Image (tube, rainbow, N blue to C red; front, side, top):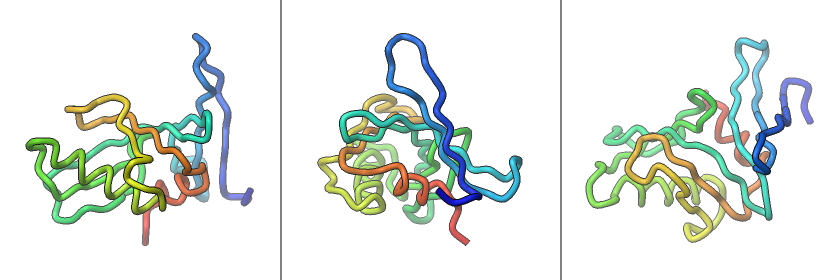
Length: 129
């Protein structure tokens, strides 16, 4: 692991899988931390969705969640469909491997992706320059 990367395992109660904080950055204040868990070949994390954006893109991290802008409006599930397509493309998995597990009508969603790894997720959480 690179010296500017950080990977912490935090224990949780109730038999849930461990929660990891994954990030990178120069100083502790500049760290980008994404909360996620890995279990049975799948990675689960939160996504904060900004709907009706100018374009669909990954926009970094916000409060431990992956921030994603989607162009589609929140009508008839269009924003959710666009989110699934974008995450599948960026994580290089099939759209059928991306599953929403919570927050179906909320801006903050729980997402499980089969076949993705923590390194791919880390790259998504780092803002592009």
